[in-house]
Image (cartoon, rainbow, N blue to C red):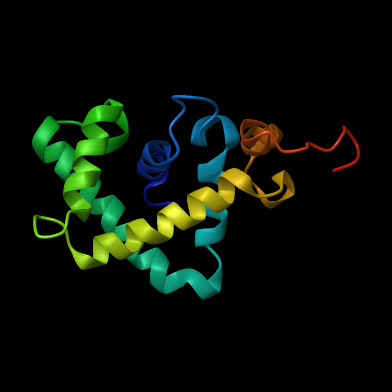
Length: 137
């Protein structure tokens, strides 16, 4: 996601926060999402996600005078909620993009670390799943 890597990481952090345990930051979830978004089969989704990221960043600059990734979590969360709200300022395209981001984020949080996410088995550890011994992975 070369156009909006910081915005993507900041949004994925909202989806999998580090409040009760490891989240997107600790598990490198956005790295996985970025890796998946360059796959040829997912390009139509990627375009929607890019529009969502661009619109979130524009709303942050317009409303707060700074880029989306520089806002605190509560402001980011509010802008995201507004962007995907039904019946409000949100659009169906943004809701579709958000649904794919949720799916990819959960997948990245729980995938095998060899796939680019779940760094140090953070997601598995959080869920209490068995983690392979060093060298067995």
